[in-house]
Length: 498
Ligand SMILES: *Cc1c(COP(=O)(O)O)cnc(C)c1O
Image 1 (cartoon, rainbow, N blue to C red):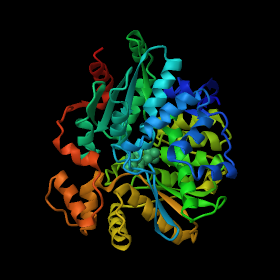
Image 2: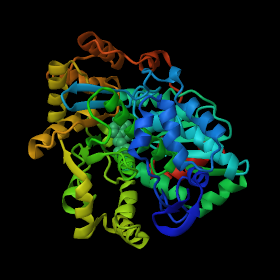
Image 3: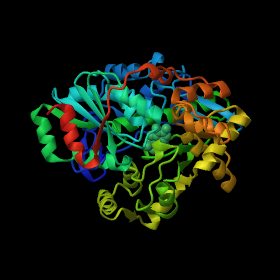
Image 4: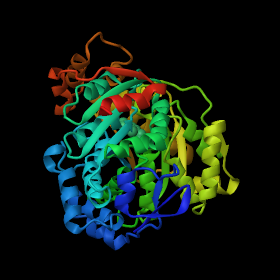
């Protein structure tokens, strides 16, 4: 299988080249030239498999330049049982009737990013051996909170890699910040930036494509790559869990092979929901993908009107990992849905960077609307959803998951479409203890420190506290760098000692 770029589809690269480089030279994103088909019989054959074997079945189709031994090494290492707090790796939990929750946060950093970022370092080092001739790979990450920690944990002490993470100084939860600033490992560094996630992401993207910086790195035998979901190696592992949850629903007796399901995704950078789109295109019976946003509802507006407009107020919400106004992976959807029109993508993306907005044709948006629905919700509804689901079903969800649950409930009310559904749960409630605790307590905000809140939440709800979060209490803070967004490239040089 070969990959091309959303902004120049004469380009052809292998999977390992796409993964090692992260982003295409001219600024486009790598996408597969064609998609493999997974028949219903293949899906049936995956039902008795472990998560590792399901993952190999899907990934084998995409990583055609990996040997079977390499694939096995990568997948078995990434999803080793001792790294996840659930034997099933990504379990599906039925909460009521046709409403199911896909828990994607049982990995080492308690957010869904682990599903991809436990695997990416393996894919990247194998890819680099094939393509990067001994260069050290420098991973630059812009994070809205969860990617940073998951990438640090995945890449720590991985030979021939260095990882630098930038996070918005006021844009992450105290637990997320502590997870990053206490990170262990010889090849890691973390820096806060005065700005929001979009500032960090734009600066990282421009550093990637800056020829002067790139040649300076090359002199030192280094090259940049990305662990953000612009990297194909981040997206492809996420396709797996959509097939896996479908198999689990069959196994649970909720559906028969061939039945359609709806999928609801709390969305920021459009990576997670795009992986579902790929699964659908490959043959997974998905009817609608429902894109759930918080008050930063730029995607809801786009999916309803065809106009993407980032010129709006940026809200800092209780679901910070979705506080994003430039959703990078939408570019991939536009490319595929426009019949692979790279000129159109170049035009739309240049409008986005000059005017901050673009409008697509009626035909394109109505094709997209056939597959996607969308909704958004505010902070108050997030709190009442956490509370009502805990009271009614004894199910505790985090703030991001609650956005999706609420948007789903409204979707069912609006459309009457209540076929079996999967709602992605993207973080452990303990990562956002302050918000979740106050929701459970009907708005009361107890004066406790972060770890006391974790314990209080545990006392009230009885939900298990993930070990990796509890153990942060005793860790030393290693990083307290802060820089302005204009000075990020200097900070990169400083952190790399060049
Ligand atoms: C990253 C993240 C999201 C958004 O996922 P995208 O792939 O960026 O759309 C949602 N919830 C949590 C907890 C996250 O960490």
